[in-house]
Amino acid sequence: MPAVDRPRAGGEPPFATVAEWLTWLERCNPREIRLGTERVVEVLARMPLASPAPLTLTVGGTNGKGSCVAYLSAMLAALDRRCGTYTSPHLHRFNERIAVSGTALDDATLLDAFAAVERAREGVALTYFEFTTLAALAAFDAAGCDARVLEVGLGGRLDAVNAVDADGALLVSVALDHVDWLGSDRESIGGEKAGIFRAGRPAVCADPDPPASVFTHARRIGARLLRPGHDYDHGRDVDGWWYRSAGLALHALPAPGLGDSDVQRGNAAASLALLEACAGADAARVAAPALARARLPARGERIERDGVTWIVDVAHNPAAAAALAAALGTVPAGRRRHAVFGILDTKDVSGVLAALAPRVDAWYLAPADAPRAVAAPALRAALPEDARARVAGEYASVAAACDAAAAAAAAGDEVVVFGSFHIAGPALEHLQLS
Image 1: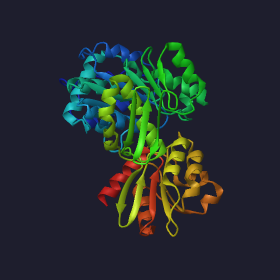
Image 2 (image 1 turned 135 degrees about the horizontal axis):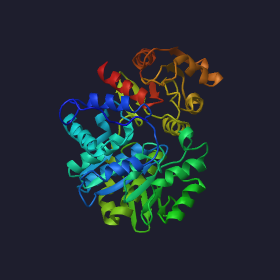
Image 3 (image 1 turned 135 degrees about the vertical axis):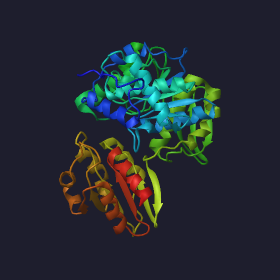
Image 4 (image 1 turned 60 degrees about the horizontal axis):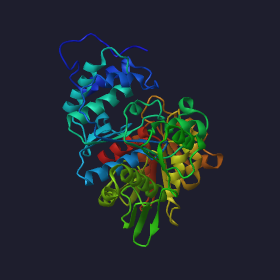
């Protein structure tokens, strides 16, 4: 794999725009995925970051990572922490991936962070994700962050984020995804994802039925494993929802900001459990109401337009699609649900479609805005046979599919847009501009 190394064309930083940096990284790193932490560890050791390191929390899992990052950052903000968050991928602009106190980095700050990594790299070959992970750490240091919440990109044990020695970890869920890299069953995937746990430190596993490999790894390294129904619990009550642990009991909590569903209450409770374990019960008590203020685009995001409810979600694997289906429920009598769908060819297309097919009255199929998008005719073929008759059309773009759905939808109908970040992002842009 070629090193990220090129002749300089005059001074630091070598590029004047974020777009030039990203194009260069893509060109130098045709294989964006190259698992292993040793390269990041080597460069990180040469970066002049502040010591001691800020409170650092890592979030891994198949689904729900972005939601838990949003919950944790909202609670840390309520504790007057200057929190940096690192997430991926982005919906509109790369800058969204690296935020401080909820605000994406501006271009000038991001350019400084890229240049800092390049100075420290000294010829070490870094992938796109490795380079940008290090840039996030540099940006948080420059901003004086006293807390960091880092989302794992893929897996856990060998992900670039795992080069950071975190104070606590949250494993949100374990389901089949990225099987070419992580293994073909939940046991293999669970073992890889549990690699973010640390000896003697809190490790929350929010999955209610995790594979045995998660327990095995936690015991082997001596992590402080915390589980729902065992070490903490949550549920609905008359005035909202409740959370309990050995040291904390909270009642009448307002609905989580990302939705009043079983899944989101579980994500919020797991985030609260991690904060409690790392910052104490008093801090968790103060911060818990901020769970209602968490916001995250394209996770069940609702937009009302001309009497039609648009629901945009990045669900791109069967487990996420099943959670979306449960959150949607059934359409009221006399109303219809339309779906704009596209996905990448690295995903279980049939499995995702099967989860939503019974709840959709009309399908609008389009390729995602990405190189590995599945073509619309192949999307039709992947639908369950009885759902193919409900395909309203195949379209060349996400925008065209959205326009067709909008034209067909009557007041009171729903349009669900899902299948990929590369569907959700263009759809949100189109809805905002059209």
